[in-house]
Length: 294
Ligand code: PMP
Image 1: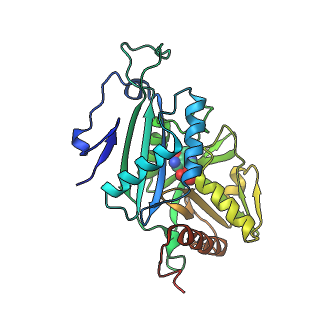
Image 2 (image 1 turned 90 degrees about the vertical axis):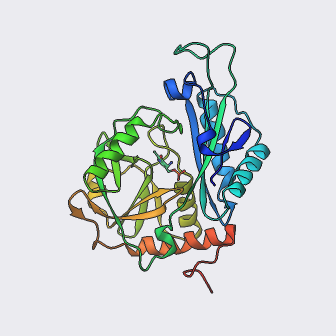
């Protein structure tokens, strides 16, 4: 029986209720995080918590819990849901006010805290030799100017992803003024002539935790990596394209719009990065996957 967490209590999902006056409901006035856990061990927890702190500070919502309290809540939630490979979704809204007013309630109201888990599908990096790539399409980035804040206001992302799905693709890669920003729910990497590139962090993209890990792993293992702007043409002419996110990790894109990327198979740079990624995950979370077994 799955359990969720709402405002201090663990309960069945159908028992979780919030007020329609909650500003998360009325204004999408809230922040979220998605933290993967493998074998019941939270992956890159401190980094996710630091991003949560930053997003909350940017929109002036008080963080209702200390890092130790967040860790205890995540661990207990995972435990209630059978540990294993799960992602923890956590959301904090500004809370429920007496009346609907765009300006923040004054004095401040108690933030609403909701958490749930979802199973993580076996990611492509776990089996680099048999993995298949996905199709992506390019779309105009129609979102706001503060995509660095992990806001629950995801209607533009949702519209973009839906357009991708309707076109038979798994992700939309977004372009702003001719440059790649990110995916509708992922960061983007391209490989050309052996060099890996990803757009620099800015207000135009979410600073992905997986993106940062891939950058770190490239540096650690001597793979050439540049954080720089990527033009639409460079995206189209890439030898490899990857997208990254906490639940999907690093996924090769082998088809872009109606064109094939590289030879239509996950590329050699992706395979090499995937092996480093899995080794890192295994070390941190005590996993023993067939690919990494000695
Ligand atoms: N960009 C956007 C817009 C996202 O929604 C996500 C996933 N939440 C990412 C990038 C990837 O971030 P992370 O690696 O931290 O999951």
